[in-house]
Length: 108
Image (cartoon, rainbow, N blue to C red; front, side, top):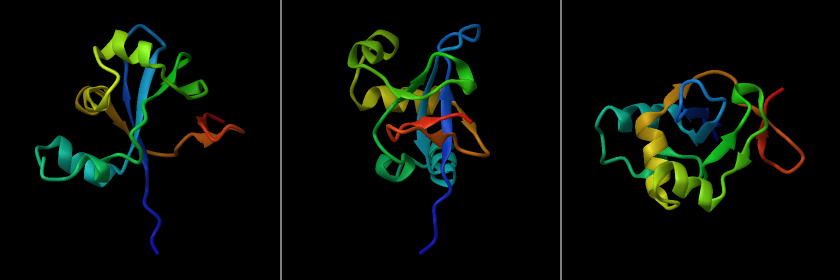
């Protein structure tokens, strides 16, 4: 069984802020989807239907975003928020952030 490489799509609502919203994706599927191949199911593009947040940029711990925070930033806490991150964010290739004790991703 081959292991799938995963990457992060990072969206910053304000370029001067350290707030980042992150969705974990399969980079190959994401790139195809982003370039217009909407026949790819979203479930194949994302690793999970979770949006993560870091208030400290790339050096911060990732935590799950509250529904209120998603509503405030994206106007929705449903899959629309994930799609907004995917459409407006930037693919970050390279090493994934490690996991902390809670199972969430974190930087090292």
